[in-house]
Image (cartoon, rainbow, N blue to C red; front, side, top):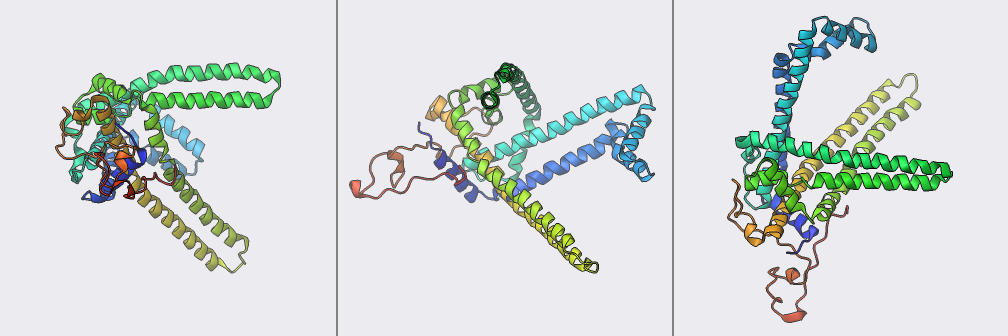
Length: 384
């Protein structure tokens, strides 16, 4: 079955346009709920699980207000905590670990639910906002699966890192040859090998969450299924993720460009400020704040649009990989998971001529013979 990244990403954009409520609003609500939930857990459970030691920032601030510098304030805060006895410190450490576990459980379950929302979106279901909670009925298996996935990633990363350090050690011996350019080239090769190794490690498990949601598999079964679906398709998945790098670079440029412009506005005003021109400084500060606010708004809007686009593209890739690995009968609606879909799918992309006919069916030439003009081939984002 053919694969065309540009057509796939355009199908995700069409799904985003036709989905109600709009994915940007759902993403905004999702981000707000995850942030608020994390804050509530840290605020409420933090006090209970750490015996009030979670208010170390208030304690630190009180010492600073008394006239201590930051180093002395941190030292006195630590001494006060330790003076309460080893039992208290043990409770703080264990309570902090439990608190981190609860926060991770909350955020992981919500993230998997958001992936389920995007999977439903690209399948044309127009999922409601409540779809982002679809992972909570199985939050235990979801968390265990994610925990095992991270463990496997760490274990596979160890030999990759060891290989990198061995290469660096061997290449460092070439420095004795007094050929700096050659040594730098070898170090760059070692770094590239490390990056490719880490990509290979992480991408093997890129479809675990979708397998959990769609096929109902958990634990090592979901991990094995993800590796099976990704076998021979790691390059396509890597290029799919890499194709979004321009959007992230754009956000980076907006952030640093806006901050730089805001700082230059204030610096320029200070440099040319007269003794009685504080009003100009206030105006420059207001302009700088307006620039920062504009940067925040623009980057937020782009991020709210980009997240469902990126996640939806990976969900679409999962549907394609599943059909490629198991045949057309394994498409949406035929899996064993809880989120089966009985509607039409358009995940059979192809760059061949048959799929680029004016009717897009691939069943033969369009009416009018060869003189019928074919539409242009879909293009990828201009950031690729």
